[in-house]
Length: 167
Image (cartoon, rainbow, N blue to C red; front, side):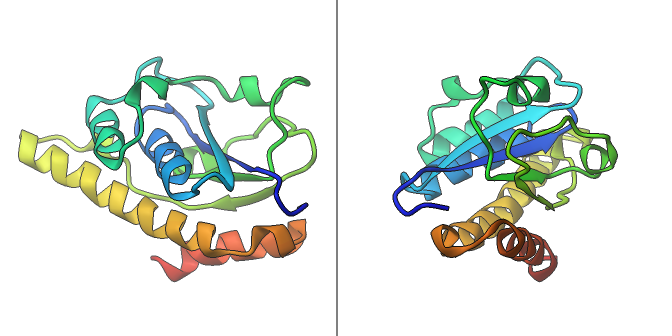
């Protein structure tokens, strides 16, 4: 990757309503202008979970920028070229992904789905916070990498190692 160029990362999940949008917000804020983050889903729900948007807002990210969208947007010829594609749910990791222009590095950072947690408000909030903390730890490790000095294979190896190191 060329020095000074924005590094594009796409976070994928099936519904694109919680984990992937939280990861997008985290990388946009913590990436400090070095990274552009995007999120999408294989079967987007069409809405962002309110607790995910709330956590993004607490981080300082404008939740109005978050929207649930299809991964097809990022496989189109005029879409931003991705450097790294990260699945954050096991369902999306097992699905046949579209062809990503530029053959980006890929990694899987499985995080339990907070939207699937049932119970009272405190239980649900705890699940969202746990997912957010897990994603934040991984994003912090990603932004610490010297991405401008890594080739595709080295980036893929490092991004995958982040998930292993934070289990």
